[in-house]
Length: 279
Image 1 (cartoon, one colour):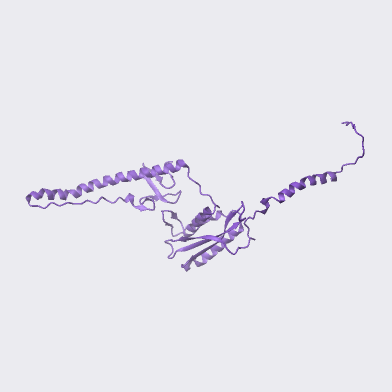
Image 2: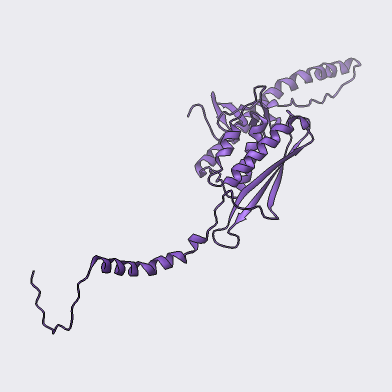
């Protein structure tokens, strides 16, 4: 392709590949400098080389299990990374467990040291929750307050770690949809109304049977008998017994591990998570 030159040539030079490389490097230099000044490069992530500060913030949780004589006190301390910036992050740094029960001393020390090492390693440490909650005691588990089933003491420790991670924003608790919450509220209302009707039906025959002696005494009053007033106390409804916030007759739901599974319309329904065996 021919190029016509209209102006006077004052000089010329040959552009070599090295010249092109230098021009490209000069063009990239301002961009690289801007990236170096970017605050993203100053973000501190959790890793095992971070030294422990003099002061840490944390929380202490109490475990009162029927498997042990004395309560366990679990303390989880957190470190705050990038404090005062938009990238501020709170991460668990160490864990301690204190109890008067010395029978568990060895495995408690081993467990807390391993967990603390995992916390300081960095990365995604939330997997430790699922691993601990999956530990089952061969002697059987127990129900904690509220009717939640715990398969082992280690599983309850995992549940505490999970609650702590949720409180510092490391784990997100999946929220129920408005439709699901409304469905659970409707099921609980239906169950309470049905229990109330059953209670009234059971009380009526008892009142009739208790009033029979009173009627016979009244009939004998004309023959010199004495009339007696019999006060009838309503029968206690076993369904209304308080087990946390769920009926005492409820069984354990395999989905949420809570004693909130009741029979409604011939179908097992959970009053806690909304699970239904019939779909």
